[in-house]
Image (tube, rainbow, N blue to C red; front, side, top):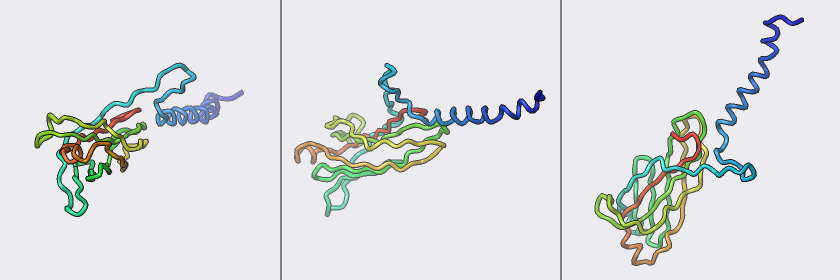
Length: 164
């Protein structure tokens, strides 16, 4: 017959395995499979800021944008690129994406007329209070005249999971 202490000691590996499974589940995606009948969790915008496009170097005729966490550029041919450092403040995991949208507006871009939809860079999963660099590029499908008129960018960060 086992003593109470021996039973507790014998059950410890089972408890440790259950805890490990729970922690791994915390870092799993929040999307549910289609076969269980539940819809995927929609991403939500967790940060958004509007900034003016500033002239870059005269040689490449790019317009640049920068905020504390994201910087990028829009070329005269409509090619855009971005690089952003996204902080995830929690231990449990979340998936983030950084996106840009371009438009025309006043100097502060508060009431811009957005000419494009938001285009997002690839998503990246982040866990354990990590800061991760997100990069992306794409193209704006506007005429040269419309591209020259763009002077504002909206930077958006969207997230699914245990967002900060």
